[in-house]
Image 1 (cartoon, helix red, strand yellow):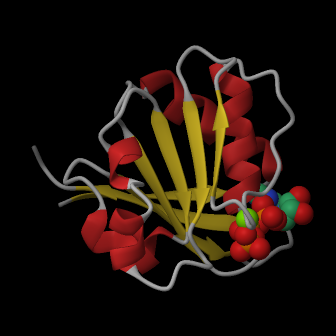
Image 2 (cartoon, rainbow, N blue to C red; image 1 turned 30 degrees about the vertical axis):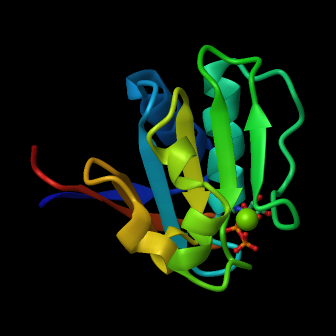
Image 3 (cartoon, rainbow, N blue to C red; image 1 turned 180 degrees about the vertical axis):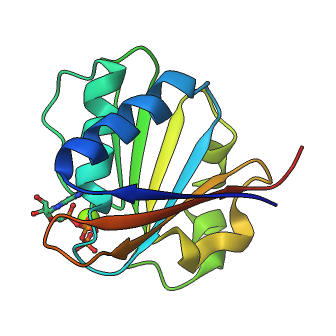
Length: 144
Ligand SMILES: Nc1ncnc2c1ncn2[C@@H]1O[C@H](COP(=O)(O)OP(=O)(O)OP(=O)(O)O)[C@@H](O)[C@H]1O
Ligand SMILES: [Mg+2]
């Protein structure tokens, strides 16, 4: 397991980190966001979308579970799996096809469905810091 801790001092740092993730992203990649309410999962996704060149307005996919954006350099599939009852629902709804698909998947509350995610998934664990905009991200992935 490769692990890196990143200190985010402000939303500006979040944006820069998102740009880095977007730059490295390849079709079929999965980014799993794990963190409490309000740590910035949707905000990070918005900045990833921006960096991919998505021109649509990004909304929170709470009710649809997945929102698809196809105006960037690759498709972006933004999930919020908070309302899923468990991993079985991922297969019932066919979401695993997205995880092995043609775009970048970014998944809020990914810990709830962890066992359904591809081995190469990049996890971003998000924690509150000491000030209002501070966050600590722990980025991890399996060694390949
Ligand atoms: N460094 C930061 N990174 C991201 N968001 C930040 C940061 N500092 C402050 N914020 C603010 O924190 C809030 C994060 O809200 P956001 O909806 O992105 O969180 P979330 O993790 O998606 O929440 P939920 O669990 O409800 O889905 C926003 O209002 C954002 O402006
Ligand atoms: Mg959110």
